[in-house]
Image 1 (cartoon, rainbow, N blue to C red):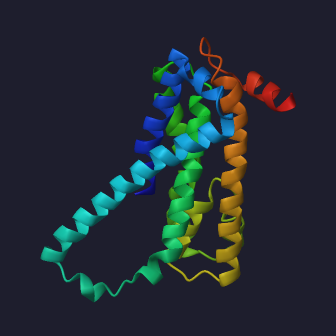
Image 2 (image 1 turned 90 degrees about the vertical axis):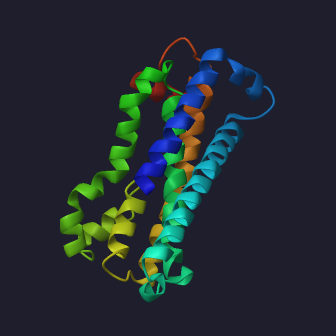
Length: 214
């Protein structure tokens, strides 16, 4: 669900940023508010719509499942799901901020098709080692990667599926995830502010490095 929602909302968010960059509407917007505020507004707006769509999917699935299965026998409560929902929620917005920042470096929507796959592939990399991870959820390397953005949401959700994480790990990984969101939003805003105004070209690695050096 995290992958699907990130792809759908990320595509909308990225294409919206590119479109505004091309028609130069964003220049008017930036005259009234700062780049971080504009970026955060776009992330929250598109993110809220995507999360609403997910709730509709889940609600429909539960409605159909109630007729086909005895869902009460699963004995799953919101309290049990709360930690997973927290990591899903913050992980979703972490991916969204990465999509927005990447969109601001591009000038054509066609460029985003390959780039958005890369954005999702990086945080989803732990899925390729899911077999080993779920057989050794408390290994040292698993604990370390659970604190490294942008792998945090995927690593923690996979580990939660097979083991009960210690309270200190829950707290430390959640704190690292929240901090990483603010860091990525700050980085994204810097690239967004410079890249969004360069509507006639895409930003390369050298230009991005110069942004932070300056």
